[in-house]
Length: 78
Image (cartoon, rainbow, N blue to C red; front, top):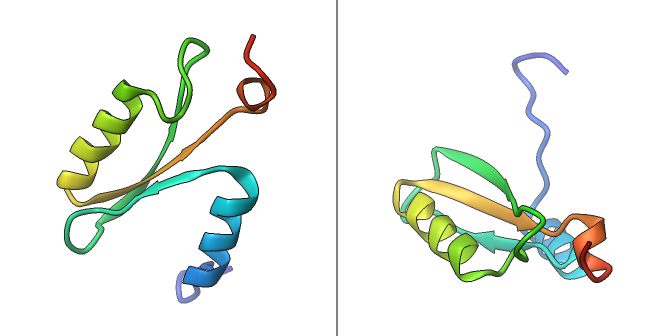
């Protein structure tokens, strides 16, 4: 892929990925300048209070945030 082409998926495809994989999407306030993929540690899930607050703060700075669960956490933790 050269610099003139960008890989992308549309809103319906994102929604399907979110449903299928249990991901969380936090949209930026205003137009997004970037997307941060935010992964949790072994001690807390993707929807923990800290992760939710961090995604909100980053979104407030104009960055979309995608949160996901590592497979070992989705299957019941360590």
